[in-house]
Image (cartoon, rainbow, N blue to C red; front, side, top):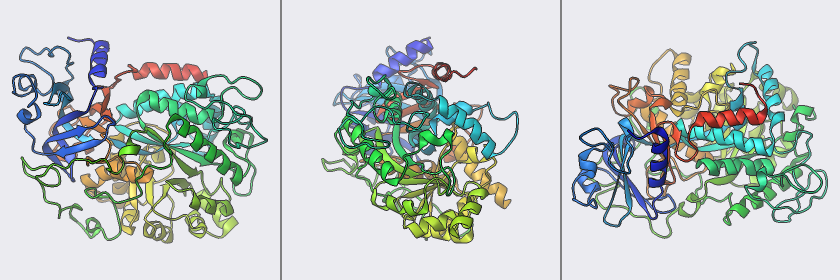
Length: 609
């Protein structure tokens, strides 16, 4: 049998075709249901150009030499004697066989149940390094924060890339193919910027005029020459971008504004590296960061061409959605005809993407830029209004702790949601994170504005934050998305399950969200939050997917999409981003053993394990 290391090598090479490729899925989540025989055709940029359902194995293998089913009918890449064919590794329940169609493009055969990749709408990559290290002494969110500050102080551009590489690789293996990285560790521990300027020579001022240096992913982790701190301008941000490239995860880098330690208070010494002195300093640095990221890709990283629209076939939460009309409410899209065995996606005529397909240009970029307000504790109310003109997604921690609400009421006479409303930033572009402790008025305002609420169930449980009113927010008109935040686990299915579990604990009732609604939160909700062309199998969107094994000891016997309420990341067998296989059976196809990546990460931070 092929060794694990050889398996990684073979599949890594096979998953990067010279031209376009395709995936034939035994079963896949399309148009709000698990459908049989789904063919996903992908262009060289990793964008879906064709989605068809009811495709037989013979049709998927029309280009194979004998015209018959691929690999003699063994969709897992197997053969009658149990050995894999030449060049194809066996991978159990959701393996990949590879054939070629008439055009010579690779056709990958996936068994199991294939879902669009999870979109992780809230991440702090370095928080993962606290996992399993903060439980001995109890405490609260605020005592946990002190331990987090110690890890933040250890980060350098070099170590940040090593840490983020491991975290993003585990994230992919856990079923997340896109991430919103809520990033606030901008400067050196003393608060001074890295480097002496930016890649474009634009003004990049914080404590004085800076000189021009190179800005590239390599520069992000190198040692800069001359005076000042090692590493080029935006070294920490570019380290994250380089790590995302290393792993092959789609990242919206949420450049975070952090100006005060609490309402009306200066930043503490531990927070010095997070800040930009004032809102103008943040806006200058943010513009320069956009230029630095553009130097990695000529297109403007803030412009994806995808603007908060409700996808045609998705079932995002919205005002008036009949799915929340009462018990047993049906799936949105019931008016969309379910397709039979031989029907094609969106009708019998196969849809193809033309030259002007929306999202196609942006989908080639793994790393794009967004903005974040850390919280109403960290950005003065008068400055929050400046974010209205930035464009693109804006994220903020909102009402995670009662103490934040109390401070906001004392200083502003308004809840944190009220502060945002007064600043004019409540809109579909805004994604409040947590939204745990809300008034009825807050819920109504967030819903009416069409915001996307990012729930992080595993973190909210770990930090004893509380359980947010997810269903009430959805019924009010907000979209629900999911995030893993501090990564107490990196398991997309567990976050999905945690969303429903919280509602059951709050209400004493089961089935608060349907499986379809939970899948939407995991996929289309996050895509809307991060403004990414991901989250569903539709022409013009990216080919990001995960294949889940429905026959493991955890999932065996699950019916259709209910597999997501039974499985864990251990059941995620194959992960694809931009049409390329990135993870197979828990191993990254180019980086290998993820545990080894973590050994490097802890060593880079000088933390004992």
